[in-house]
Image (cartoon, rainbow, N blue to C red; front, side, top):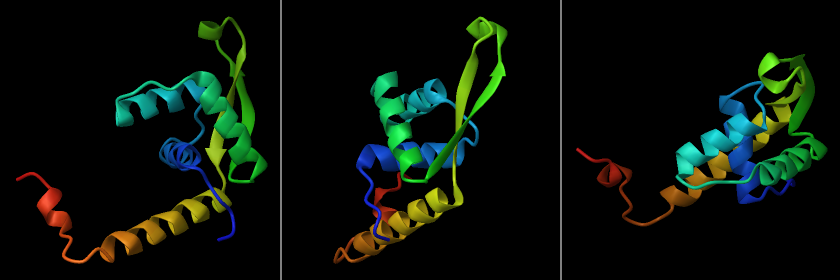
Length: 111
């Protein structure tokens, strides 16, 4: 893997993998639920554009909706390459965690 991802790029990519064909507001909501902190919609859109430029995300315009006054949403989904990169990052992180001497994942799980 030669492609570099920032932490926020990786997080947004993972959110897209869990919510196929979603849009910026839903991504921001999921981020806020997971990390208990807000993120601006412009920040999400900047990351989505970067991921799309890298070929990890594709977008298309959805159908107009009444709640948006007839405007269309831009819907995003991860590409196969996006999935591959996310999986490779997960494996590399797992390898690093497993290399910590004496570390026990089970000790972190509340009983």
